[in-house]
Image 1 (tube, rainbow, N blue to C red):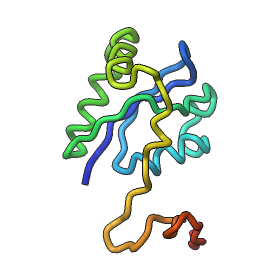
Image 2: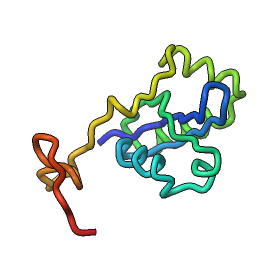
Image 3: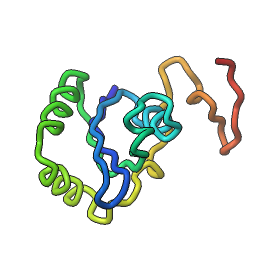
Length: 118
């Protein structure tokens, strides 16, 4: 299982948000719906411009903490190296299948939506 560090932006020179998650697709879906954080909702920080995978939760957490302490310009340089056009990387993500689950929640083969109970 991978753990991810990510950076979101609200616009070209807007607010930056750094976080980590074990399911990047799910976390980005929650952030875009403004379901988890008042901060990301208030500043509309939803564009995924950077992410990297780590083998352990501790490694991802440590990396997130380091990046959070960086100066803004260093974060922007990291984003530019990783994603020069600053395109939204969310479109490249696919839902992760959970062990023991044939399909990710709310998804079905062929693009059809499977309804699941909460």
